[in-house]
Each structure stands twice: as structure tokens, then as C-alpha cells.
Length: 455
Image (cartoon, rainbow, N blue to C red; front, side, top):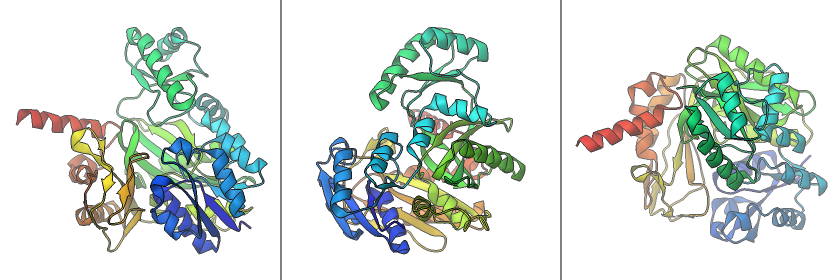
């Protein structure tokens, strides 16, 4: 059994992990930078350790300081949350070598799925549909041209060592390949420390669908339905829901079976996500595997009744999945809106600063995952996510109405947020009808710009 967990993260996910640990009777240690000294995770954890200055590379990404904090507080496990070091095979390996339980996948699984070219090869061998593209890392732009000629344009270049929209370039014509390759490779080097790229067929107006998996590392793997993640800006998700309005029971069965085979291929342990691209003809293809808990995990929790953070902790402590297999039927519908401290009217410019006043929404079917409070100062050093609103209903229509109510009730003064953008999206007829794809937001912004120019 795990006795004490150090949380190697900050913000809402750190608070979320603290809550799960408290319900399991496990002690918690919050680590924090100087910018986060007044944060709620520091206040609610059993212990707190300052690990450095505000910049992430001097604190939350500083592995020696994290390990030292665990050793000083006698923490026997570390939960990395998401972001920062959550998908670092090196961090997971160092934890294991120091006798500290890493609450997540094995270093081997993280490394294999973290290399996108290796991940595609692994999934292909497991019988999972994979997007047509290069067999592995591209040698140069010339090889990229050869692959593109074979599979047909348009294509997309992607960083082999990471995601999140960095190191990506769409190429529609041969003449654009060389400059796109150079730019994508430079971005990949800067973001992930590796310039390696691979190439895939690019599909117009696809949907982004992901399947939640749980594995115990002992041969047990279960799937927990899918999430619709098509509302994105520059490959960053804004709204997620479960189940997807586009997935039929038969398609869900096939996607879950493919995800299960993929997770079994790496003897997966912990919570993870198999991400698929769904084209307009109903064909789905593996994109990547996220070897961590996802920001959007609450929508799956709402429709399954499971606590995924607790499951991660129990599995890391040596548990199996026998206790959850009996009942994970999907019930109802859940939608999540990510509320960021950004100004959508000014190119999504970050909006750090003091929250002068705050009123969080509530009522039936509403869940708020957040670390903010009145007079809290949103620091400029980290991701701009400040809250997640999750609305649950008996069906999609009820969940939508509850989310609209919650957005109307959410009052935050002193900083700009993405709440007005979410209100516009939820009011759009195409979104309400479930007619969405990864280009939805770009079209919405384009329409808004045209209206503004006309006026």
C-alpha cells in the first residue's frame, strides 16, 4: 500500500490528486514554486515543500529537487499529474531507481508511446488502424516528398518526440515541403529536444475521438468509452464530451476493441488514452497514445462513475482491475469546458493577474475542478488553465443546457477568460446538432472576423 504521495505538479490537477488521496486515507505532499506559495494545493496538502523559483525549469521540471523533496518528506510515491514530467520516461525511471513508486505507466511504455514513429509501428503490429504515412522517422525533406507522392496530398509533418501542435506543418503541394520540413524540424528541436519528424496523410475536417483505457500491468486492460475532443484551437482542446455524438454503438465497440489491443501490446499500466482520427466516412485511425491522465478525464468519470485518479493510485500500489470490471456502463452525457486566463478578443493573449471577485457556478449536474479563489493571483509562468466546468445530464441536450447555465453563473473579475468564447460555441447551431470537427473553431473565428470587418 502507498502511504504518502508527493504531487509533482500544480494547479487544479494537484488539488484533484490531493482530494483522491484524502479519500483513500493517503498522506500528501505538495511541491510548489515561489509563485505558487499561496496556492490551494499548498494549503490543503498535509505537507508542502518549496522547490525553487517561479520558472518551471527551475522548479516543477527540476527532477533532483523533486526527488529530494520526496526523500525529505518520506513520500513513497510520486504522482506527476499531466504536463511537466507526466510523460517523461526518464523521470519515471529515476523514481523507480530511487525506490519511489511512479503513479503512472512503466518507463518502457512511456518511451515506446512517446516516440510517435515507434508508437505507430507498435499499433500497426497490434492490428490497430493507423493513418497512412512514413514507416518511421524521415531522413530529410526528399524522403518526405517520396512518401507524400505515394500516399497523396495533403499531408502533415509531425514531431516524433511530442505533440500539442508544436512541430506540425500541413503540406498541400510538393513545392511547400522543403520549407515546411525545415520549420517543423526546428520547432520540434526547440520544444522536445529532437528534430525528428514523421509524415502522415492529412484528412480534411476529421473528428478527434479518444478512448480512455485502464491497465494494471498484469494483463488486465479495460476501456471506458470515448470522448469527443474536436473543439480545438491550434491542436489545443477547449471542449470535450462523453460520449461522442458521432459514435454509434457499433463504432464504439470497434474503437474500444482497437484501443484495448493497443494497450495490451505494451502491457499498459495506469490510466491512458488512445487517440483516434475519425474521417467523414466513419473510418478511424490511431494518432497517438497519451501515457498519463488527461485534462478531460472528468467527463469519463461522470458517465462511468469511476474515480480515475484513485484507480491510478490503487494500480500503482499493486492493485488489479477486478473490482471495476463489473460495472463501467456509460450512463448519461457529460461536457467539459476548459476555462483559460486568456483574452479571445486579442488573439488569446494570456491574462495573468489578480482575481478581484469570483463566483463559481453550481446546481444539479455541475462539477468544478479549479484551484482559484477571490484575490488569487494567476501567475504568468505556467499554462493558462484556471478551471474546468463539467456538466452532466441524462442526455446531451440536458448537459448542454446545464453547461450554458453554469457559464452564465461563472463570474470572474480582474482577468480576461475564455468564458465568452465557450458561450458562443455552445449557442452555435452546428455545435448543438453535433456537427463538429477539428476545424470548427477556425471557421467560427473566421466568421467573427468577417462580421467585424463588415461592420
